Image (cartoon, rainbow, N blue to C red; front, side, top):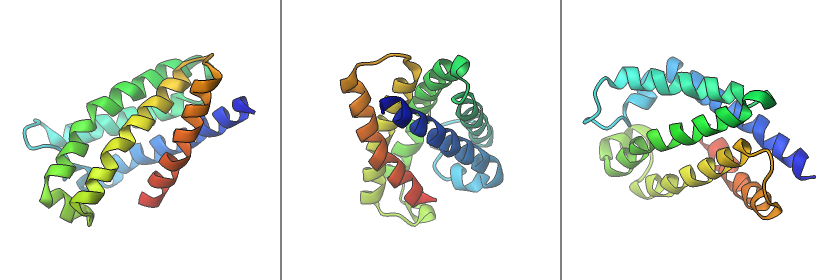
Length: 149
């Protein structure tokens, strides 16, 4: 049963990351507004992060590349976290997204389950306890991200 649930999560994440990565190219302004102003070349950063979301999302599917894709996602999620912090701190970014500061705060911790789930997919074998934690984290996380679409 765990294997089936893990497969469901990996395919769901593939779609989530690929869709979000493509959006980096089709709706640049959506992402530019949350790039902290202290970072140089914001357009390039949006395109590069979108490229890696697509790449790692697609590479989650083959078992041979899943570990590397999942670890790449862990690094990517950590790398883009300043954008989420900036969204929380910037009234301009919040207004652009049509969200409150409180909603931006709620959004911040969702990076943690995404990192945990990506790490889970980097492991061929994990304890039943970790499997259960990852599956439990996946459910509200995917519901949350689907609500953003």
